[in-house]
Image (tube, rainbow, N blue to C red; front, side, top):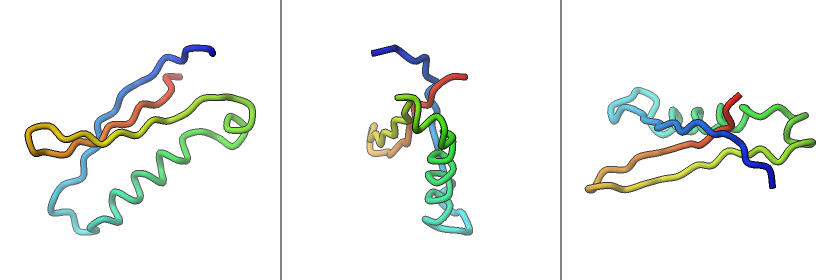
Length: 67
């Protein structure tokens, strides 16, 4: 399996955002669109989404291919 260089992103949505959970839903939809349909068909590149709890706080991380 070929190793792909990745970039790690930490995502955050302000607690008092006007759109509620829909704001984070839009972030996830955007991440889904990062890989073009052609890449999805011909490559094994992927996006990894992680939810982490540290000292009672929740963090969202995404590892994406570096281009």
